Length: 190
Image (cartoon, rainbow, N blue to C red; front, side, top):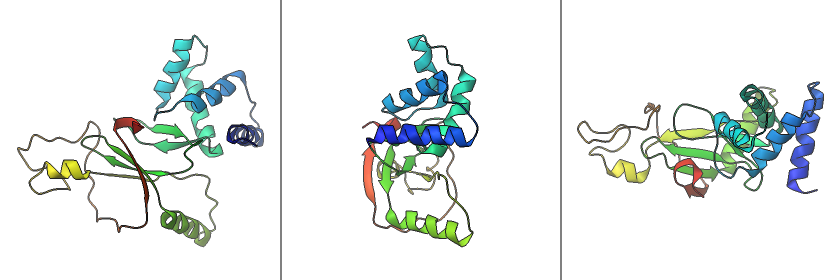
């Protein structure tokens, strides 16, 4: 069964389990998400419907996104500002993100070790994982090179300022592991 049909089936099954209907609006939201190639937020998705003249409310878009997340049609992603960003999972499969809070570069990666650890942690706590959101925020190599001391933080007077809505977080460096990396520019830029 093609991936799109599988996702539609999973979405419909989830709706049925929750006692919800596969309405005209949910059908159009599902189908539109499959056509979005970049990272998006709920407002951008709503604007796509508005431009097409479809009568789908912003509230319906916001209420449908968690259902699309839970069914695996979309996953959380990163983007500019403080809003929540998403992307479709078809074609790429599950992956995680590293986000430069200065230049907004996005690096998509997969790491089997992280996935195994998540499964182990869930098993240890007898927890059924539906989806997860793994995003790392910091400074890319190029932005670190623009500072006198490097990350974390920029040197005073360097003129470099973190992107709107993001502040550096304190914490240790992650141990490097086997990663599959796919790099993009701001908002995915594939």
